[in-house]
Length: 429
Image (cartoon, rainbow, N blue to C red; front, side, top):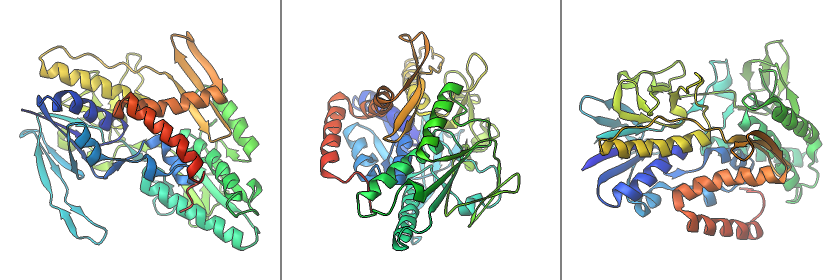
């Protein structure tokens, strides 16, 4: 039986393992194994909502083991250590608890086809003090850390009868930085209704710092200026063309020598693949450790290894790279699935072509702005407000449907509506 291993249970990896399990695994045509170092999955674009407490990850997180059982694939908890391409085997590191007690020894798993979907981590560009003093919003654990620190600062402010302010600096005005800035102001509005009556937006000082000339540089200028305007209306201090050269416990230092004071600092200024991926198993990598792939999503040096999501450097026909976005991971998972099926059937593999369906940025409950691209619009159409919010949420629904199917996703939407009545709007613990 063919062994297919998918390493990484992010948006693309989990969708691919689910699809392979439903088709090949269910019919015993292949053994599908998903490997991830965490026990549960949370859609990465939701992390800014987890950070501010407007989303309860206990409700939205998905257990890998339970999902594997329901969709005919195996789950192994562990971190990739190395790949032995000659013997077609991967090595997983041993698993320990917080006290250092051994939970699972290091293991080796054999594969016929390997899919790497490990995703990305934050890139601090070796800026002094960032790793020690900033929060990287790239995992649920970091989101929890942010929420704990934010709640502690608001408690201190409340204990001082509202004297002073909570100063938060966010470096990087991509989607994460912009969405978090808006979500913070929503959190303050909600906290007022939960016994923090002396809190208002004037007590929250958010600096959004961007080295480039405008926020949301990956989006068209008219969308970034619309988002800039909305953030300014909320009270966010947007600082473009401002490069951070150092972070310490009291705040950030800019290239001009200015200090931006902050009790909480978030670094969202760029991504890279994990350091251990650098030239792993002699595979070709780039300067940010991404694996370079052919247009079929196979690595340049091994046709039995596929790479999808943020870990892949995939070049398009126009010479640009596929951007590290959730919609790209979703599309890559579909193409990798059809190419793996083709490979098993000795059929021709098809090239992957990224289709940009537009970009949407949620400014919490206040607004949503973005662009939609497709056959209907004959190009790009700017959308904002309620329509954009609906489309933004539908991206998550597409992910859920890929994992659970239409009926279960519909039931989840119903449960979500019920929870909005039963649960507080903000997770306060």
